[in-house]
Structures are given as structure tokens and as C-alpha cells.
Length: 117
Length: 110
Image 1 (cartoon, rainbow over the protein chains, first blue to last red):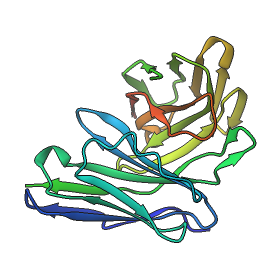
Image 2: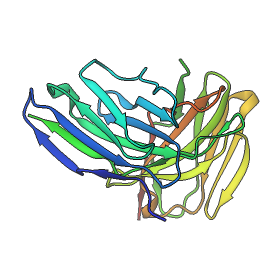
Image 3: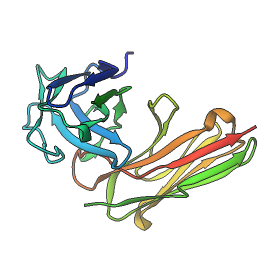
């Protein structure tokens, strides 16, 4: 079946503008994660949605970052008033959630490369 | 939080050679995945291996959870194996985000 998809694949924006990044998880996956990959910080967690539970926002670097997940499927990551340090590849992953206490494998999308000029 | 260390950071191999990549982690985990990031940036799942041993073609992996390390073996390497290999772990409670190591950059030369 189809994997995780993300759009756009590339986004160039001016400093101070808002951007929205989209993630379509694998159908039936209840868990959805956002990560980002930058040269200085490696791969780091941002936010996590599991079913109808409140999201885990512990990885968001500032209050300029927010995310929604509508209908338990598609997610949008919004960055307000973008800064140059926000330039990175933003990756989305999804999984089936939990089997008892054991988590399922996570699958990643191709990412959105964000460049803030 | 949990720490993940990968070694070596860089590795250059002649085509046909074998290699072992190591991942050490600082706490109990209930999830461990190995990924290959290709030149286009896509993370490709290699193994989901919180414990035990698995094999897939020329690749195999072993995780010794009690000693907090995992090994990825690549045999008869090919130029298409080049890229960055990441180990990522989830801590030992429920469904948690992955914590990634910094990766091993592998270059296989013909």
C-alpha cells in the first residue's frame, strides 16, 4: 500500500512568514510523529499524536511551532514567524500504535525541505 | 533523556567487504530500529529489533537489550549500500518517539 506522504517536498519562505507542512500517514496508523533533521542537531522529535489522546508536544522548540491532526488522519505542522534557524528537513512518521506495551515500527515519509531566507 | 551513540561515525569500504556498525544506548528500551538514509534523504526501514537477531539478505542485526547495544552487520557490501545508517530507540514505557543516534556515514567504493 501507499506509504507516508508529505507536501510540499520543498518550501522556500522569507523570514517572518508562516508556513504549513502536511503529512498523510499510512492508512489505519493511529500514531503520527513529526521530527526534523538539521545539520547541527541531527534528527530530533517535535510532536506526537496517538489516537484521540492529547498530543505530546514536549519536543517543540518554541511556541511558534504547532500541529494539528484532523479526523485521526492528516496532520499539519505550522511554523509562525519563521526564522533562519527553522531551516531543516521536516519528517513525518506513522505507526500502528501499541500492541500491549510494545510499540509498532515507525515508517517515515520523504520529508519537506524548508529553507528560510 | 536516553542517549544513543553510534560508531564509527564514518566508514569507507571497498566493494565486497564486510562491516559492523554499533549502537549503544543508555537506558532500557522497548523499541529499536535501524534505518538507511539514502542520498535523497529518505529513511528506509532496515530492522525493527528491540531484542534478538534478524537477517534480511546481506544485512543482519542483533540487539542485546540487557547490555544496551545493537549491532548491524553488512556483508559483501555494494556501492548502493552507501549512505547514512541510523539507530533509533524508544524508551521503556509505552509508545514513545524515537531518539536517534548521529548515524554512521558509509561509503562503499568500487
